[in-house]
Image: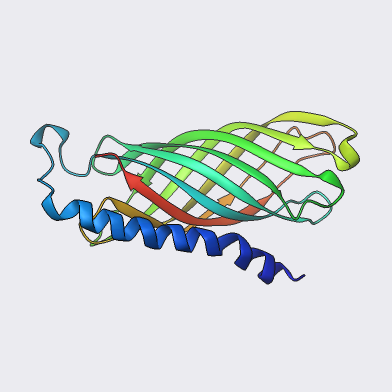
Length: 189
């Protein structure tokens, strides 16, 4: 089975869920009121999930999986992002990577689209081949992407999110996985 086929099987359920949420968000937003003035322009909280595809850098593996994230934009262009990612699909020989990251997020406001950059730090957990060992490591992850808010609904599509991770104190020298994610989110306010 090719990598494209596996990725298609991973993203297809998300596309169906996104379509359903889009319909629900547009129906629910039909009678919505404007945002209270106390929040200020550009403030929002959104929670979402993505499908991810990463190049592991440990044996040149391509790992796929899912993540959840929360974005807290308390000011116009500056916020905080936290994410948890589990890369457990296409994991031959039992190799898995799990990361828990948090850090600042800077965005540019445009009509509908919101390009952003981020610099996350946190913990990575690595499962070695054949379940021989498991280790926890410090992770640095700069990245960026584009979110697209669909109309005036609460639904946001994470068009692309790219991360360049560095695990500087990995057991066998620095590990440098990189990858991309795509998914959906819903705004809390």
